[in-house]
Image (cartoon, rainbow, N blue to C red; front, side, top):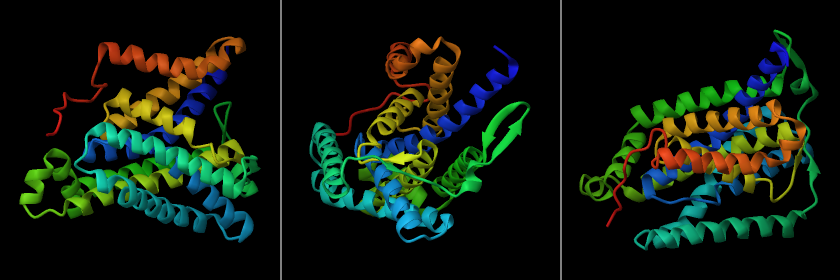
Length: 298
């Protein structure tokens, strides 16, 4: 095992961790404000990937238009899901939201199969995105470098939005105490819709990046990445945006190193390793690495 091989695995872990972090932040943001585990989040990512496919392949538009479009489409789809499925149950027990999110996820997957067929389709980004960059003997494509840089820029912008903007402060106030926030004049539904919209936009961008790296798309492509991003959010401390980013990178590095450092025969057990890692961390840190003890809302 050479130093170049180890560096290559670390680069792969950085790229995969960036994708997990991008999706996990959306999970964590929604949970933090409405205490909802939204399993349909990964399917918004799938919608983003198919939207990008249509823009790039069917309409032949440039890549930047696809990125802009999936931001908007992801946000609109997520807000529509909130308005149609979750808002009417805002005061219902949490388990209702959990079951509803599973139902929405399955509904979106089956609609995708019905409308688009379950057959995987090739997803091709412009050839220059496949250009290799040499990093001390390791290989990094322009696409992978773009994933890391774009994720850093988006997460940095999101941090500023949450900390400095009026909508961001409204979201934080709603997450802390929705009743007190409403008494102070904050429009709760608007703050929640914003959280869904931002999370959906991030999932849309993650969809085009994930599809570009995998080279194909299908209606079920969002389920497993969404589930792993949920694991990343729990590892970091669900409800904490910083924890979600940290959990995403921990999971990305751990998964890549598990596959890359052990004999190939163990590679097929990577998903078992991911969920085993979740169990081990929760045994010692029940609230995740950066989570705090939460109180159930009345």
